[in-house]
Every structure is written in C-alpha cells, then in structure tokens.
Length: 305
Image (cartoon, rainbow, N blue to C red; front, side, top):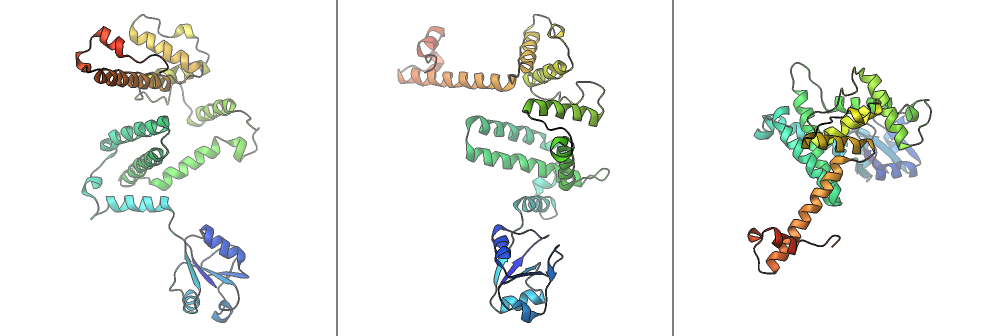
C-alpha cells in the first residue's frame, strides 16, 4: 500500500513507478481516469496506491495508520523559486529586495548576462549552471516587481504564458499544419517573418535594441538591412574609425559571422598574451611597468604558443 501526496496531479518518478506497479489506484483529488477513494477496507487490501493532497485525509490517514508507504511529491524547484522571491518582497522579508525597481535592477541584469556569457565562453559547466540561475533570478525579480504595479500588473505566470504563446505561434511547422522546416536557416527566416507580421512593424529596424553593445548593434542592423535587400554600398561610407567599424561589423554579420563574439574572442586572446608577457618579464627579473616597446616585443609570446 502506498499513499502519494500530490500537487495538481504532478507525480515524481518514484510515485509514477508505484502507480504503474499497483493493482489499483484511487484518488481523493480530481484526477482524470481515476476512481475516488472507496471504503477503507478496500484500500487496505492488495497493492493499492492512493493519490491525495493531504495526509490528514481520512482515507490517507487510515492507510498510513495501517503501515502504508508515503511518497511526498516535492514542490517543483521553479515554483519554490517563485515562492522565495515572493517571500523576499513581502513584509518581514528582505529590506533591500523590497525597495528594488525595474530601473534599479538594470545593472544587475546586465552584469549577470555578461557573467553568463563568460561561463559559456570558458566552458565552465558549474559556472554556467550558477549563472543561469542568476539570470533566472533577474526574471523572477522583475516579474514580482511588475506584479506590484498598480496600473498594469502582470506576474511570472503571465510572462510564461506569453512565452508559450510566442513559441507555439512562431513554430507552426511544429505545433500546427504548416509546411515542415528542414534547416536552421529556414527556421530563422520564418521566425523573423512571423515576428514582423505579429508585431505589425512599420520598419525593418523596429524592435532592434539600440542599447546593446555597439558592435552587436552594427551587426544586427547589417543583418536586418540585408534581409530587406539594402546593398552594402549604402552603409556609412566615411573614413572615421566609427564608420569603418560599422561597415566591418555589419558586413561580417551579413556573412554569418558574429562580430561581437569574434571581437570578444580576439580581445580575450590579447589579454592572455599580455598576461603571458608580464609573467615572462617578471620571471626574467623585469617589472612589466618598466617595459618599453622593445621590451614588450622581447617577452611577447610567439604566435600559437
């Protein structure tokens, strides 16, 4: 005999195994396809599983008193995370969390996003897991702040609901009867077409985040304009460093290269070379701060080293 504590009909792997192995399964909570709990004598006979929301339910209590095993279905961690965020923002919670706004949290969203990028680029799985959690915290935090808005409140469930609608709506080839999409490139094109129609944008640059890093912004503008057929010769044609940088980044993105990511990789490689030269200088008894051009060349690591 087994009593399974369940929330909203959710079963853990252990509970599901018990249900599948049972001769009979009953429920004190509404579950499609299951009979309500019969009299106690029938519950105490054979391999029986009872789904219930509380151990104080009379049927569950009788089975437990007779020695039934109890399987508790833990609250899903995402639900727990939302509950923790709610507690932190509630009276008696965290004073710092309670006074934060969308505006005051902006810097943390940016910082956590870059820390996540670092974890991805370094391949550090433990850091990746941690930083994904930190970005998730920002989503939960902003959703909770939004839920308290007196004029236009929405909560994390609304955010998730909108996301589900977007994913389903932009994948008609998966969730509806639209033609199948066989390549990632085709899917990306269809996504943009559906987004354009869905948002009824008047310009090909509507929706481009102008606050993103400049190289990424130039790349995005190059990509968007390319899809619309804007020729390369209409890019800024001046000789300033900024105009040249724009052309390089925008042209690279059109060619399928991520200019922000590529430039970041080059910058990180340069940092590694700098550190290696400094270490080599110190090993030779020379302080890096005393190095001039020829000294830097002397200690600079060979290409590919």
